Amino acid sequence: MKVILNENIETLGHIGDVVKVAPGYARNYLLPKKLAVVATEGNAKALEHTKRQMAYKKDKALEAAKHLGAKLEALAIVLTHKAGEEGKLFGAVTNMDIATFLKANGFEIDRKIIVLADTIKHTGEFSASVKVHPEVTATLKITVAAA
Image 1: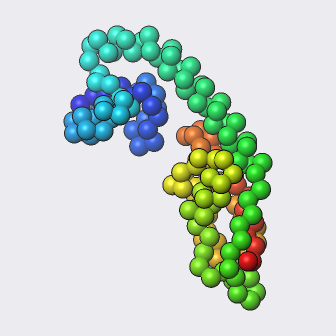
Image 2 (image 1 turned 90 degrees about the vertical axis):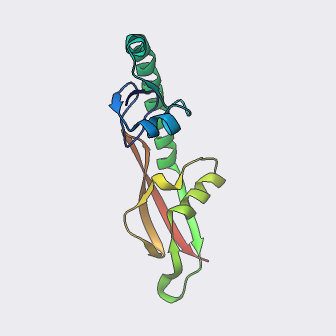
Image 3 (image 1 turned 60 degrees about the horizontal axis):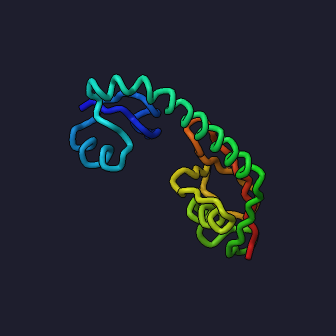
């Protein structure tokens, strides 16, 4: 089944793309959530008109993502965690801990888009990347201190 995407979907494509998906995926997920419309002749004709609107929406989303990325990069993340001697943590700092800190500071960031290069198992300074938009990735500076 061919559909026209109304939103960016990482595994399928970007706004305005015509993609072929399984009928059940389209019928049960994409269409009810208004993430896509069926690619019929009428919708294909309307696509030309809506492409301008989608391009505007895409540009606006990109600008919002760049703004959010700049705010995230400016934020200093300090996490305290129980640690033993020589700074070794009991457990590890995960992307869920980082997402909780961000939520407490007013950022609604899903933990799934926070990517840690290595597991954080000792105190110190680390970095993590946040894929805010397919074209925008913000780098977080994380400082882990002993509690």
